[in-house]
Image 1 (cartoon, rainbow, N blue to C red):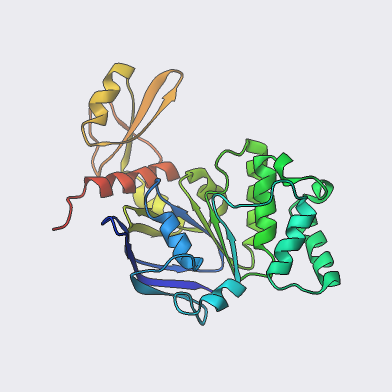
Image 2: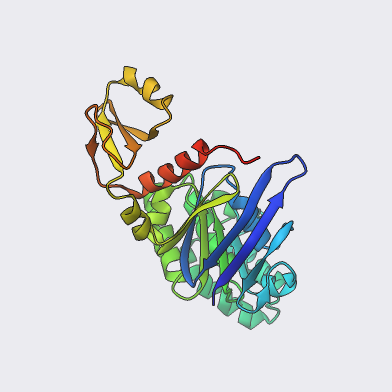
Length: 296
């Protein structure tokens, strides 16, 4: 099964164009949706999750019209938003049992088997009697994945899942998502490049509502090879480069800024060619879109 999006657009009442003619084909597996805050990622996710209306365009999940057959979408959808509400003083088992009932699993024995299997799968069995208010951020996210898996979904949408997680919890979450993504369409919406690099065979970059890139991360890296230039500078020089319009990224190494610029030819002035990273791809596309003149 694949998700095919054509010409999806959304403009809010204040005039902000959250999505501008976005077209994407998303196959089975992990798909990374990268973009800075406010890029339009969450708007796209909410439309696909049937929580918001699009102004124009279409989206087909297999034979299901996502924009018109909302009940059919919800039957095969698992959704983990950035913030999801739970009853904090209820145990993990009780809450998952309640959600399964709401999703139509009315047989008590069937529901018991399902809830126990999901808690085992997300490694929360030992905490099943613990109240959700006492869960760490990573445990809450794993619980969120468990509830999103009820009903054997064909499409799972995960919005900014690893923000605030420690490295150990991030790795556990990565492993769980990778396992899930073997058989269903999983859209991972994030502004964290490492999430996509670790997990996704395909990705898209979106900024200001526009699709800037769609394809495998490796193809994007190959496309940028020979176009990224690196230089170590003094901190006092950073502001000048930042205002030049050429800087795509910078990071501190041993207290000194290492800056990257993008260009087809060597810029001189001490810059050397460097192998591009996925961060260079991301920042390069965002930089180019921000530099592009606005259309009349």
